[in-house]
Image 1 (spheres, protein in one colour):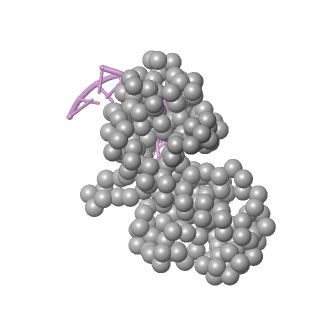
Image 2 (cartoon, chains in turn purple, green, blue):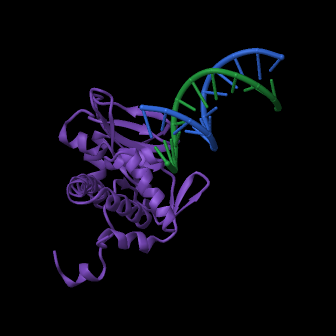
Image 3 (cartoon, helix red, strand yellow):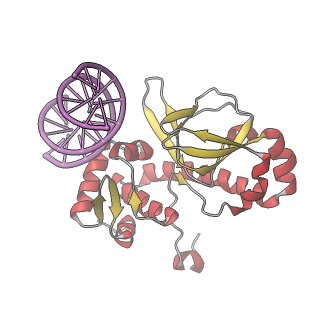
Length: 228
DNA sequence: GCATTAATTCTGT
DNA sequence: ACAGAATTAATGC
C-alpha cells in the first residue's frame, strides 16, 4: 500500500480501543432495543454464556479480556460509546468466549437476534454497515496487536498506543493505570512504568491528578517511526 | 456524620 | 521483589 494519498495523510494507528463518535444513526432504531444499565466494576458476561443478542453501548466503557486457567488476565480491547458488543459471537453461532467487565457505569441497548436480522439489517442499511464497521474494527485490532507485538519494541508500542488513542478519542487525557495498559498491550507492568517515566522526563507526557496527559501528541507520534 | 484501621491498589527502584 | 504513597472499604463511636 504505497500510494500518494496514504503517504500524504497517514491513517492513525489502530489501537485496542473502540469508540464511535457518530451514533446518530442509531436513534431511529433504539425503540427496537431494550435499555440496560451496567454498574461500574461489575462483570457483564463470562466465557460460556449464551449470546442471543447484541448490545449497543451508549455510555461508559467496558473491558473485554481473556483469562488463562491460572487466572492470568489479557485484555483484548476496550469498548466505549457507539461500539457494539456480541455481534461476532451471535453471527458465528458461538458462545461468549471472553470476560466482559464494565469499568464504569454504562448504558447500553440490547437488540435480539430476531430484531437484528429482521428489522435492523432489512430496514436500515446504514446500521448494517455500522455492524460491519464494528466487526471489522475488532478484526483489525487483533491483527494489529499480533503485528506490533511481533515487530515493534515495547517502547514504540506504548507510544503508538498513546498516539492512536489521542487521535481516535480526540483527547489528550488518558485515565488508565500502568498495569491496565500492560495487560492491554501484553507487556510487563514495569516496562510500562519505565517507558512512561521516560516520556515524562522528556516532557512528552504529564500527570494531571491521577490521569496521564499527552503533552505533545505529534512528538509521541514521531517516536513511532524514529530510529531511536 | 466522622475518625481510625485494615486492605488493596498504584508506582518507582 | 519490595516499599512508600495513595485509595478504598470496613468498623466503631
